[in-house]
Image (cartoon, rainbow, N blue to C red):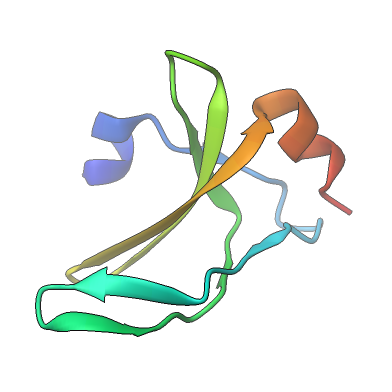
Length: 78
């Protein structure tokens, strides 16, 4: 599974994760409006400890990179 390959971490299901929102996304057929990502799944970039919220549905991987370290990101969880 891709989750194992990319090292997905998870927020406790009883907690509310933050929502990542961008004005638009790039897709193979061009730009379009985005759907906010509210996900209990996230990954941490090793080089600078920045977090990306991720959503994996069928054959689609969506992600939004936060300008936050893992520690800062987890403080936003309610």
